[in-house]
Image: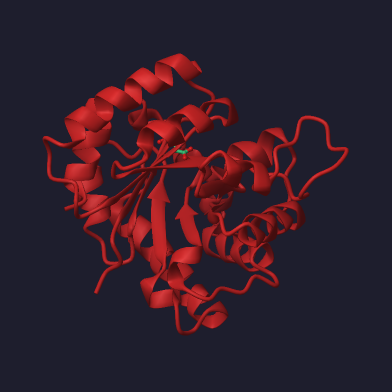
Length: 253
Ligand code: PGA
């Protein structure tokens, strides 16, 4: 049986905290009017938004996550936000290794691995992002690049249950570009990721969620989400609009 799909918004650096609260109030109202019980729903918001959003989301089907976490627990790390802090304000998930952090903040696999371990120490569920660049895909290197990231980023990570880690396959060339991987290419890569997860977590991999991310929208979501190894989406641009996110949730049914 396929795992319950996870429809996860990645808001990136958008909305003021006050706008985010109004957005969520309206989203929750409208969510009640559409079928949504077939999916888990998550919004990954900026740090400053987490506390008011998590308070507002309590008792609703929406869960709140962060977009990054420090590899350290506490101490002299100016500007950093730790796993214990995220947990304390009500975040339950955290995106780790997003390609924008790898590209603009020089995050390498060693750091991403340390962040995954820091998140797990606090029982936060990391959403580990992996994906190849356009040049790597054109050179036929997509598969080894993605599987190499996965193996390096998950060194020494142990899990007790399948819900403790989510993987997001996000081809870098599809993020924010309007270009999407074809549903068959997304399926091929997500299946390869699951095979690699089977080596790492033999008893859990079949039930772990592997998401697709990269210009997912209401038009392409149905086909992508119908693929056997695609268990949800990590959605940037289309998660900022209530109508689009609701349509994607419906498409996951
Ligand atoms: P996009 O972003 O949906 O705007 O392409 C996805 C992501 O970066 O997670």
